[in-house]
Image (cartoon, rainbow, N blue to C red; front, side, top):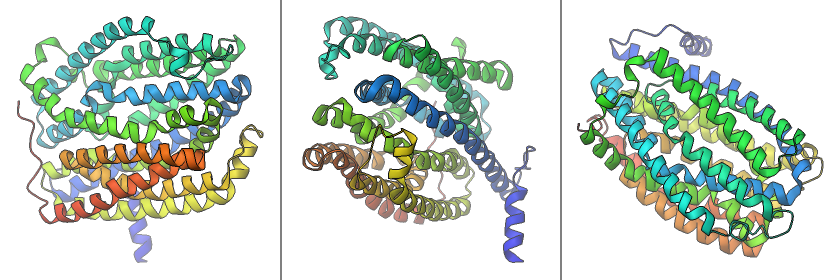
Length: 469
């Protein structure tokens, strides 16, 4: 009966109507409601994304071939690493907006959103000017080791499309931070699902028109840009028109304060990019573009689990910030403990299944184009287990604005991971780059993170520092 009661109480939070937040119980229920809605939306979005991925990867590999596919993924990894070029502004906004939500401070929220938007527009314009100078002076085929007659002509146009569309979409990143800051984690997942469908359509169109790697990248990133522009229009024209960026709400002091908060996020983002998205670059430079496909396809399979868990756990970031602003320390402690147990259990179970069945799944999935080795699958299995540990800890530290400690952890992780990945890839092949990431993440983040959070929980309840404006 006790179990049935708990299940009934858990299901009661799944509703569209918000809870009364005038007391601590109502605020806790409202946080759980938003987390539950985000989780449901994430499952639907991940189903759509996974279905599109299951179709697109074998189609792309058989259209491009292993070497061209590897080049496509390597350039995509470079774009992923450029995420830090917004100076960490997007991540810096999340906790600040969650704090303003907890304090019902609309004026500060308007200043934060407007100041961030115009700063990102400025950053994009500066980036475009720098890229215009750099682009014609770089031998892009040599930079990506794409010197064969088949790859060389496609490299520079692909880079041009990627950087151009990335810079064009940079200011649109504000709206995702708005969703997350207001604990609407379900909205980005709807955006992702729509992007997946449009990207798949773009893939087939590019193949039909024989547009090559540049066409695949342009239509894929263009689909994301179109969907994000639509979401931005919805948020600022209909959902929260009072929050729409306006020049009169730009506040230089707020912008400077945001940059100070975001600077550490930027370095953390750069470190995470080196620690994770650089793996394709390490494999490409040591083993060649064809080996990137051997790494990337199993990575995509295992990343289904990490992305799904991210959908459940990411909404905790603003929820922690809002709960801390209201002094609900008990809810934070309970939620951290539960999220850590659930995350480790699910990731470990998934790792066991995929290590034993993953090789067969990959071979069937891409019709023999890639055959992963057992050491590679074991490495990715350990990667899942460690990811299950680090993700809940990371959400707690972000939500409670513990940034300097993360700065030390992630910069150390980036240095150690890059060194280990290079050494182990030369010695063990593709699996070495994954083992390097696993060891560096566990040593530099999971162990010190668990130690720090245990100490931090004892002093919880004083509230996060506010961004002074």
